[in-house]
Image 1: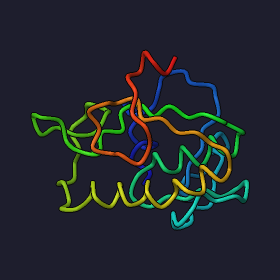
Image 2: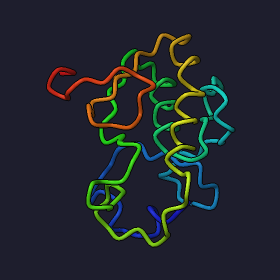
Image 3: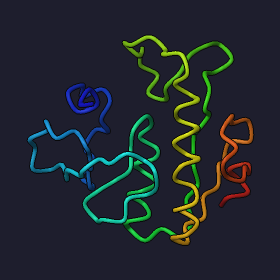
Image 4: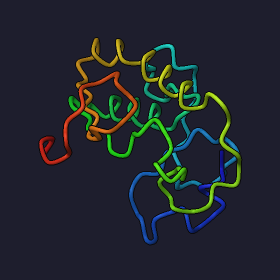
Length: 144
């Protein structure tokens, strides 16, 4: 999806770092495009990321490509907030919540977990209240 690119409110102001996307319709030379493959495992080809229902999987894959040995997940709740809101941008999400979407995300994490371990990438979920139980959970302060 390219909504994040088309809507300047979703992009950090003045960011000069690496921007990576699988949205092939972005034609901006500042954006490194990567091929997206189904997340049966983390993609090992350097120009490819495993991704389907959650960009977190792609981010994990990208961090593994960059040589990360430990990844601390922030904001991976796997469920809506108690007040029913969702998504971290604090911008009204224009699409309705699809039934089963969080289950699909959880299945995606489950699918990539063995390959992350095989590649020597330790993953910790820094949200003890998360519905995602694929990786150990620790409070953020303990992850520092």
